[in-house]
Image (cartoon, rainbow, N blue to C red; front, side, top):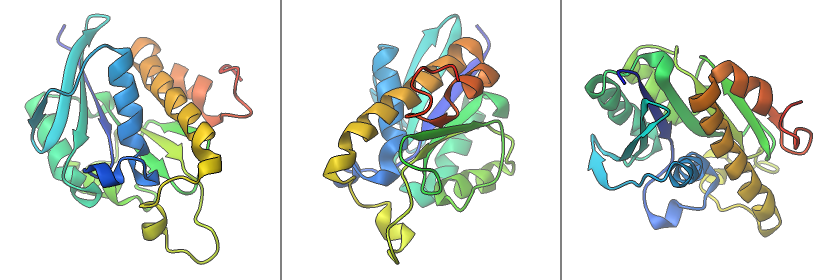
Length: 199
């Protein structure tokens, strides 16, 4: 049971941020924790942390409480403390460049302009870690992206948001059970065109 997987959901702390577009990473990891029957019972390295054993593997879930732009310090400290290989780190974050309802798993890559991912890349000195991006759609008109992601979803979006959070949690669960490649094949794409999960 030497192998450790660290799954990090990104978001901003505080109840006032809990339902914003920027916090879908927190929500996906919360849902995964529930499905694994583990709870966030302590704070460590400026993050709420939950841990358990799944299929003989130690699984650690974390939600940094540093605010999005400073997530890297918390994540890097967790990686070092738990001796997590970067290929076993999975970061879950929002993405305004993907339509609502879309997931995109990647084994590595840049920040795509996401300040939380940028902070993690800087702190780790590497882009070589998997990430799950959850589409929250682009801001309308000339609205500034930084303001848009701090807003709640519209009323008419709530059903789709709930569905994509469940699907994101399922994708994370699939990574744990079957690996990243299998999860990419099954979940990359739009919820509406991949409802069967195997396209």
